[in-house]
Length: 362
Image (cartoon, rainbow, N blue to C red):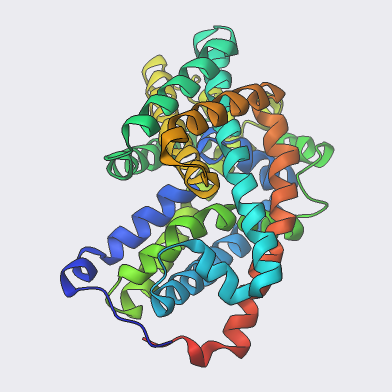
C-alpha cells in the first residue's frame, strides 16, 4: 500500500484526545443520550446487560482501531475505500448502500427524537420539535457545516458529566432491587439475548462511525495515536453506556415505556437538571442530525451542484415524514435491521485482521 503520508502539521493535529473525542461524538446521538438505545439493547436484560456492555466496549475498541489503521494505511479520503478494501467490490457495494440508507434513517431518527423531547419535556405536540429540528438542520447544511465538529466536542463532555451525575444520584436514592430485575424479565429487547444485542448495537454504530473514522485515520501520524485514541474512545463509550444503563435499570418501572427515559429520570432530581439535560440532549440531536444529513447528501448527490440545495431540501422533507413513525419504534426496529446488515462489514474487517494484516503498512 504505497501511499504518500499527510504533512506532519496535519498529522500533529490528530491527537489521542482528538481521536477519542471524535469517536465518542460520532456514536453518541439521540438514541444514546436519551437512554432509548441503552434501554432497548441492554437494560431489558437486567444484570446480564452489563455483560453485553462489556462485550460492546471491547468490540468498539477493536473494530474502531481496525477502521482507523486501515484508513491510515490506505490514506483514505472516504469510508468507501475502507469498505471496498475489507469486503471487496461486490459486498463493499452492498455495505456502502447499507451505510447510505442508515445515514438517512438516522437523520429521520434524530428528527423524531427532537419531537419526543418537545412532547415529554415541554408538553408540546411532537410536530413542533420535528419541524424545528428539520428546519435548523436544513439551514445548517445549506449554509455549510463549519463548526459542527467543534460543537460536538463541546456538547459531548457536558452530556457525559450530566449522565454520570444522574446515574450516581439515581443509585444513591434508589438502588437496584429485585422489582427492577423482575420488570426487566417481562420486557422484549432489540435482540433475542444480550450477546446478539451487543453485537447488533456495536454493528450499527460502527456503520455510521466508519464515515468519520476512516478519513481521520489517514490524517494521524502513527498507529500509536490511533491505538490509544480507539482505546480511550471505546472505554469512554462503555462508561457512558454503563452510567445510562444503571440510571434506567434502577428506574425501569417508571421509564420502560417512555420515549426519552433519561429526561424522565432527571426530572426526579431537580427541574434545573431536567431542563439542562433536555437542552444538552437537543443540542446533541442537532449536531448528529446535521452530520447525517450532510453525509447522506454528499454520498447521493451525483447531480450538478446547481441542484445541490434541492437535494438537501428533498432529503430533509422526506426524513421529516419518515420521522413520524416515532423515535422509540425506529430505535427498536430500524436500528437492529441495519445492525444485522452491518455484521457483514465487521466480518470483512475481521478477515482483514486475520489474512491481510501484512498489507496494513505504517
